[in-house]
Length: 114
Length: 109
Image (cartoon, rainbow over all chains, first blue to last red; front, side):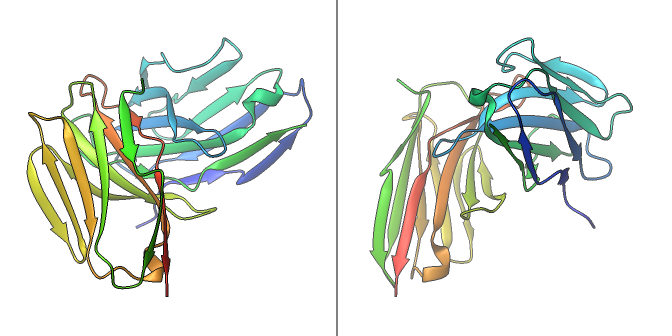
């Protein structure tokens, strides 16, 4: 079956623009995670959904970042008024449940803010 | 001090060599993940373990819960093993992963 997909794969935004990044998890996966990976760094946690409920958003760096998963499947990460420091790869991962299950990662969206 | 630390940060090996990458963590975990990331590519899960040892092909992962330490071993390394290897701790509460900074492995023919 299909893996986790993300779109767009690449996004260039001018500083101050709003962007929306989409994640399609593996069908049936309850848990969905967003991570941010700056160049040369390991990924860092942003937020976590269990079905449509956002259970942890402690990693969102500012109130310009907003994530939703309204029907418990597709998720969107929105960044308002983008800044240069937002430039990174945004990774989405899903897993079957919140328990001890592997996380399956999407290819990521590379965001460049100019 | 990072909650998850890896060593070495960079590793160059000759084809056929036995490779070890180490991971130490300071948080309580429910599981420890080893992941592989190729340049420009996505992340692939290699192992998830909470105790003991797991083996898949030429890859072996071990964990010592008491010492809060895990190792990833690659036997008979091959140039196609060249990638970044990342360990990540699953803290359990929401299963969010806390990542190490990765080990860049280059296997030369």
